[in-house]
Image (cartoon, rainbow, N blue to C red; front, side, top):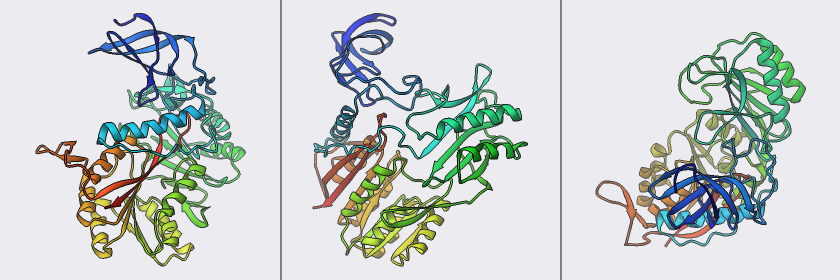
Length: 459
């Protein structure tokens, strides 16, 4: 098996990224967009140490689960991996993805509940974030190709609502009219770097990232946006650095800094930088299930609390609730949320979880901890703090099965540090906690990503 070979092979299974896995006598071949049971002509692109990566040139025998992708740039854009797969199969894949992560990474045999489906298979995202650059000398708005910063131009994205298409067209029109160029990462030249839009109950928070302090003709963009959105706010974020930070200190130029929303009888606010889950339907069901794991007499500590929506839901049910969040804007939203909902038993703490959690655990004794961290997971020092205090229950929400399995492995004792502080599988087995619930949620249909809710109970 060598590079550029064209071989006929049959897909045996799916890999962790949703790619097809074909096992041959002289090695294993990973092929994107190939489904189990399919026979295909595969071009070998790369071979190393008995592992090869290929591209399906022709599907000889398609699987019953194969469907036609909706997106014209599917396979070129890095946003989706599963549009070629029937939705019910996507759900099965994600259930097994979580199960296998726990087994492979943490050595834990868990039985996840079937992955909860999304009400919408397409058009579910309430947030659009698109880089703006240059492709072949022309302005380009789109998404990055897989594992690159090469922009794949697109006029629409089926994962986003219908407003995304006229928005992209309006930005092209504005840039052409005002003589503005997309940003070139190689040269550092150009004016427009990124546009981000968050929808909140038919109101929109729009942030344009530029290299300019002032944009001549910005009123024309306001006019174009007004043709699309009935109510919106506009922020300008200036970034002249050579880094990849998406938004830096957005400055409000038009509209309100925050908009109100309501979920599960909680009135909340969100700004341009406030974290909210992108799929409102799945978020609502996920949060309801998470709150159901708490009792009225519990004291809840919500770590990585964002704008405080889940903290408020916990305060509504529990004796007391704390929210810890490092982003000042999000913490301010949580304070306003507390005021508007009359939640006197809710306390917002602005700062790092690493710095705030220990003192709350010491003050509250047998509290229940909820983690909802970024993809990198929970800091190992925070996990040690939790193990040192031994709360009765730990609820963990994660968008990354790998870091979730790692952290749960540390909390259950199936993973331990060796002398070099590397994590290794432990022969001692479970210590203080055991896994009581693993529930995947399809927060991100058509992609390899999955949200998971885990309950750990103290023995």
